Image (cartoon, rainbow, N blue to C red; front, top):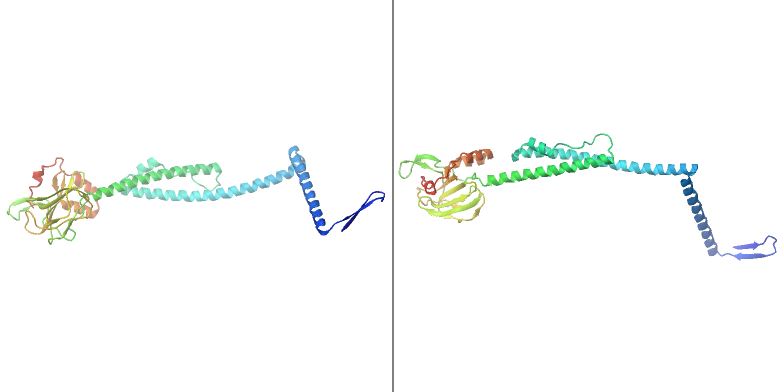
Length: 330
């Protein structure tokens, strides 16, 4: 491409030869110059018009800003509505959790009315109208507070239920000989050796020699000895002045000071001591006074914790002397 440049009187002229590469570069330079010039003019006119309030520029600016704010508000509203729906679902689940807590509280021995008085009810209700940001934040704060209260409540219920479980595990309600039936019951009877009336202070479980004897409840072995009347004897302390006794064993598998779990094998049935045949003599003593073990075993079958509490409360207030509580008939 060739350009010829002349002056006004055509006295002088100059020819410029442009190759393909130079022509492209020249076009790009011209385009860039026009773009920068247009941007500068637009920037100057638009900003100056916005600052000075030119009618056309001001209206155009308001339309652009209004449309941008409308899109932003619409986006925020959609997100707030979605959060509000999720919040409503969380509140419904929280109320279900509250109902479950009330039912469990009955099992733990806690009055549900006291729970409501301590923790309060409900919270901010998400109704049909759209929530504002402040309302949503308030509702979230209420939900967090109620969640903390329900957490505290369930912690208390867990503690109560755990205490009940431990207490039940420490009460001799499990039969000490699983497969045997009761032979001689607790109470007055004719002594099998003397033929005279005497108090039988426990239950007799006739069984084959070597039959496993298990602990009726968890506790600590406080006595493991050979007694002239009880023979090989074990006593387990379950706490709260409650002791179980196992007598006439042929073989003892624990020693004094051992920690015993409920149902653990501790000995084998025998006929040592004052005995007429192979059997287990099983006693339950509360504050040193023999109680009817059958009541404890029956309470364990019925899972009646209040009944166990009544059995404990009915025991004599003053313990007997050790030598007296070992003088009963076997």
